[in-house]
Amino acid sequence: MTRSAIQVQSPSLPSIFTAQPQARKRMRDFFSSHIRNANTRRAYLEAVRQFSAYCAGIGIVDLAQVEPIHVAAFVEAQLREHSKPTVKQRLAALRMLFDWMVVGQVIPANPAHAVRGPKYTQRRGKTPVLQADEARALLDAIDTTSLPGLRDRALIGLMVYTFARVGAAVSMRVEDFFVQGRRGWVRLHEKGGKEHEMPTHHNLDRYLEEYIAAAGIGKDRKQDRKGPLFRTVKGRTGELTANPLVQSDVWRMIRRRASQAGIETKIGCHTFRATGITAYLKNGGRLEVAQQMAAHESARTTGLYDRRSDEISLNEVERIVI
Image (tube, rainbow, N blue to C red; front, top):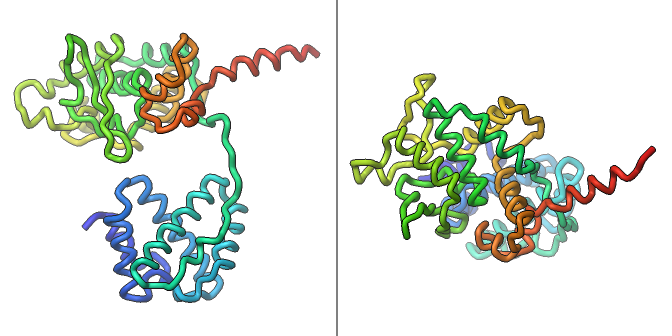
């Protein structure tokens, strides 16, 4: 059984979704088998916890008591404490879960179906972006005389030069960096089970080769080729373990490396996706090609990462000479 399935049965979850055996089983199946993406599972589970706590606070102890007005009131309460995108996501989670309960004949109708979420339109991404020279300075500031340094440079380089999501980067196996047509390629395991392959930039090719050679992974044993590419370090020894890095590890590493490089921008894992896309477009790249490289379903999504207009806005602001 998955960890999420165990969490669903945890006594820490208010009783509205666990009071009835049929509802408890249905919800366990929803989180363990219906929601496959781990990040979505965590977000939806938090939405259910929030709604369950809200219902407990107003005296609702059974799913049959939930009406659209209760869901609408929950949405309004959430808007007082959380952003519109977060509230929209939580409403979507409730709609999907209640639909699942209806199909399982736990409740007769979906009380969240008619509830409208907050309107939210985003034309510009909020992800902090580095200028090309800042990204270059960050990479150059990494001490590559150590194995962790080689690993970190290769990982950051991967996210910059391939626009890879951090989840796809840490999911890579050693065999996902390979030679094809006399040059290096990477295979990224993106959301929705999609595999995305693209050739490596010459800098990234060098970063990966130097890291893999120093780490000694994937050379002889076929089994090791199936092992994680980016691995944790054993204490302060500088030796790699067989365990993959997780996203929280990468976030802490990035903040540490940025601080060492003197970068004050509060960057995160997604920064390098936006940085790479912006640098590509500023150098004459086409939006539709950037969309393919980033494995986006829509060019509109890719456009959120295009921060070329930031410089235009800054130049215009500087015209206000007072």
